[in-house]
Figure 1 (spheres, rainbow, N blue to C red):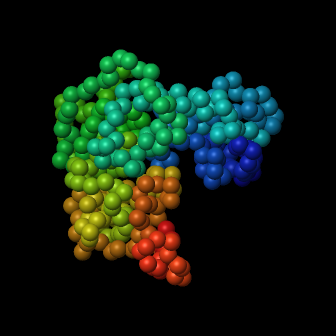
Figure 2: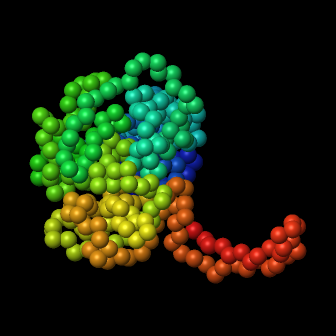
Length: 334
């Protein structure tokens, strides 16, 4: 198969035909647009949130005309010789700022009490592209609270309608019982006549949700993620569809929650069953592999050490205050 050349923010990458701009940027490893609805493991995802928009300044080598307006990189296939601007385009950055403002119109300021805080993609977007103040003066959407089961907590006011949870239930569970009800401003994630979501893999909707709309009831208000230490672990699960490979979020030796492992793009590597996620909270249930790799830009990396180096010894020096000589200091590398 002949590879085709794509240029993203001045850097060239060779990709296979049919690759989208977003996938090409991920292969390049930089200039990657944010994505709130696209999920590489969910067929049909993408094209909902518009946060991944980019500017195509050259359609291809054969037809160098630019595309007339920003396009969704998760849905636009590359062509040979295509030139794309993401971070280097003021138009894209301004457009993305408007998209983030739109997503935040009805989103409550729940970050101090939300269990997703610290690992929320919308928090990252708001920090990078959000405005200092909202221009929205109208009443925000409100929804009646419903109970969708013993394990998953639904906060519809936080939902951005990315459809990830719907695609997840469609593709990895035997029968989906929830979906998007209503249209336009009244659209919401719900179940018909408040039926409980009780499938063996229903807990995976928590992992794919980019915001705090779907959270773990067994972890609800128990701790903050940056106070916990994620560990890689696995077990031989009785469910043949379950990989058994997880992250254990621990504090003081207690397992507070269990999640599926995620890759560098925040996507689940392999889905796990509800038994592993909700019922196996003892260290004896798991084979601990070691600390999980956390990006240094994440707040979860605070006080989290993967490896240590030989401590550097600072020699004693005359004190500049009345407290005596400065004591030796050791350092740990994150």
